[in-house]
Amino acid sequence: MSKSSLSYVHPSPTSPWGTYLSQVDRVIPYLGHLARWSETLKRPKRALIVDVPIEMDNGTIAHYEGYRVQHNMSRGPGKGGVRFHPDVTLEEVMALSAWMTVKCAAVNLPYGGAKGGIRVDPKKLSRNELEKVTRRYTSEIGLIIGPHSDIPAPDVNTNGQIMAWMMDTYSMNTGATATGVVTGKPIHLGGSLGRVKATGRGVFVTGREAARRMGLDLRGARVAVQGFGNVGSVAAELFAEAGAKVVAVQDHTGTLVNDKGFDMPALMAFSKDQGGIMGFKDGEQIDNDAFWDVKCDILIPAALEGQITAERARKISARLVLEGANGPTVPEADDILAERGVLVVPDVICNAGGVTVSYFEWVQDFSSFFWTEDEINQRLDRIMVGAFDHIWAKGEQHKISLRTATYAVACERILIAREERGLYP
Image (cartoon, rainbow, N blue to C red; front, side):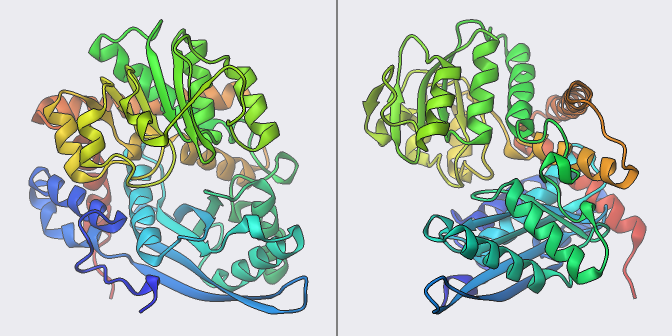
């Protein structure tokens, strides 16, 4: 049985899809009459599995398995990234697409949720092979994506160049340049200013709002960051600019600590140049597991799913957890953190800055009129703060966690759209 053949009916409780289903179950009591539609949230609308064959540089033929899942499109076209990773599975992509549905509704964007991926290690491919994989995958999923139906974007191990190849492939196959088929493109191909830093900026904005409400002064606050890509590094940089001290950083190369706080511009420049943080002179290396023992006020998991387990949740010293990654906290760990009085700002609002600026890019592509970076950041801040205010009020009203409050707000919007559209035929 392949890794992609997992059932979505009875998944493991700690798997990404199992985690998502548990989150949906917790919100059903707050949906009122809309609860009759709740099964809609537990079943992806469409899941496509494709074979991606390419000729390698050495003349051999390689096959990779690709996916595109459209979870729910009641509120608009599908929206969600494409990741290239050797551990990608259909179940993981299903969960990520579902989280996108909730995320888009939480910030009230006119999108549904989708996600894509290829089970491949892009680091083992030449640039030529990477382009072939991208173009073949785009051609295979071309029958369900489009500017008005499903708009991919960058995710783990994908970037603006990958999006440029996807946009070009789709455009060649349809006979007209379609810049709006993907977001996260290079600026000169219809990309938006501010897009690269948008997710990390959203983490900072929601973190700032949460800290203010709980009486946590960012000046001097100790911050630990897991994952130092676009999300973690940008969030860390913005917290440092606000007066916080980034005292621990972990990425795929290892874990560094600095009790006085890292020089963020220097660390970011080093990581970009060296491909990781290890070797940075102003940090002490510790075991990766010891990262969870570091004394901090704010913890930002910005790597992959399932990182905060029950065991790790018992160790965490932070008062505030900001989920920069998708699905970093398993449900049991969520309960433990709640019992310990740790406030968790969930992924579906915390890291929604990326899809929000992707929406700005999509709108700009249709109008062929582009905003300045200051305008982008102001609009992002306004949307994120408004969404957070609404979710915080929902949590206070029902005395529920921010995660359940976010799901309550988002699922109500999704299911109202489903109910008002009705069932066809």
